[in-house]
Length: 101
Image (cartoon, rainbow, N blue to C red; front, side):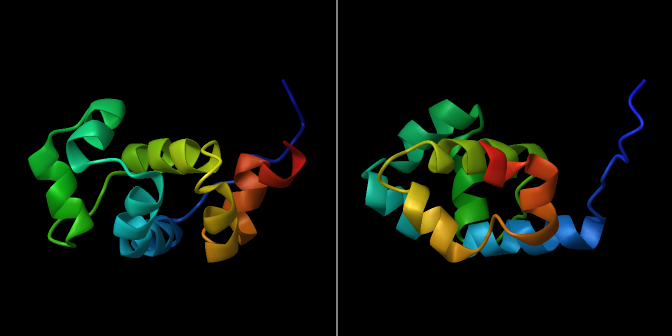
């Protein structure tokens, strides 16, 4: 077993990161030119669920957050936007080892 310390994010940290991404979802989606329906097929969630997340009526799950983060960080049209938004920063960047990829 590794002696590395396992880093965890608190529920409050997760909610904060989710809120930041939720606020920018329409902008990221527009930048790629993808519909809600197309993005939902990638995420594996219903369009109704996604729409409720994008409009702030429902909080996205941590798994959906991580999937969106991965999708947007590997898309050439949104990678820089995501990095500029500072969503991937601090504890989350460290946890994901983002700066070492």
